[in-house]
Image (cartoon, rainbow, N blue to C red; front, side):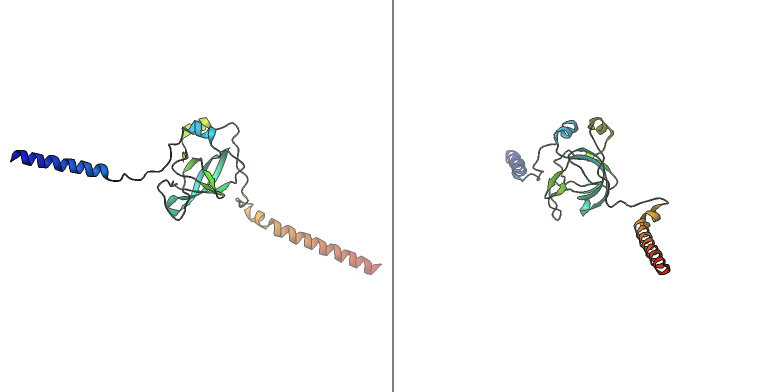
Length: 185
């Protein structure tokens, strides 16, 4: 009887192990590990440093204030980086971002959009990244949507309307002077 009981336990253990081995593994991203930062900076088409100012879509879309461009063409001062290729459909290799965090970004461009995922070398900034900063790193293009700040902000916002009014007023005075001189002659 003891042999039968021992054999029964052995069969149960073997069955559990077989079931676990046959179970599907959790899906993992279909990509290779990103290279070390030194190599990634050297081989990437686009690299920039920036701070996430706002997030959407559960952190899968980030508004980023670009601080420096390390590789690639000219970039605007504000960009949006998507954490995956399908914004409405979360995928296993999507990247999420945190507002207020500074990152070094290694995105790729898909249909004119900056896209990032867990397969790139993008990462929250650490001081060691400064050591791999290229000598030709540059600032982004000035922001076209920037707003004035400080004590002269109200004047800056009114500069164009004031200049227009001044030009129209000056033209009206000039016409009035010419007309009055013709009348007196």
